[in-house]
Length: 317
Length: 101
Image (cartoon, rainbow over all chains, first blue to last red):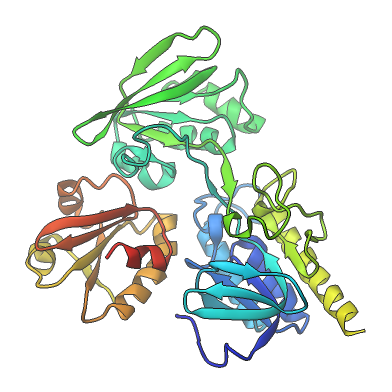
């Protein structure tokens, strides 16, 4: 792999897709299949958050026999099969005005008539002291990656959504005791998770809790101090790991001031993907929407590719 | 291409190397590790001759992972003159790996 530099300076793509998660991969497949000259930009390797999903239970037609990683690799092969061209580089800046848009990369730039932003989201941080320093030393954002390092130990999870609930279920099979600190007095997680959680003897859900402090010993997590939001009481827990599952933040920093974002940083776009800038579309987790799932990401990707094709036709006439 | 290290050749290839060495502590079952894999290969090609790049499977060489207190995969460490010079955790883009050097 590696970015191709041949003719990049003169070439103008019909569509450049930023991000190769399920939204970007589907957009690439639809755009290329519709005969558009398609570039797919990715700063890691294809798959996005899907590639990091161990078991995908809620993508129609898929059972748990295949991992999210495998599914994402097939999506990428499919997009390339129809002629999408993958460029492995990072978009550092964008010039989105006018009929030809420019994406700046460390290795040069890409010119394109339309852009689909499909940069997705990443795990949110708690934003407390020692969190960054102890990441990799007990603070983790991926329970399936790091759970095994804490086999038989007491650990905690902070969060109340599907990810936090799934993490608790996963860790209950590996760790000794699991504390799930939930900010409110209800779980946002889907009911199916709660039913499972209730029956796990080594998972304790602690409601209305905010993690105030990470306790460090010998350069690693030794515990946490939590505060009850209702009473203000603080309690210390001895845990070897803190798994953070407090939602995601959109990867949209590079668009700040160039396109309309909402208060949480999501690109404002409707189902067609149209953004505040003509010829620029947004698909997947990065856009404003109700439900962020693989199934809604791929739908966005298809819609955006179609919207690009329509936009290009209008520009010609 | 990066090479996969084992417990037996870690000291000679990493600690006693005469140039900086980048080591990707990974696991075969870890999603972010899979996403980082191709990036490590690119970095290895780009830095060939200047920096040695290796991968270490933490399940095959748990003693080395424990010695360096690896509690998360992937963890990428930069060694110079036998000591850890820099460290990053998680699947990170190529530019970020290059900035470690």
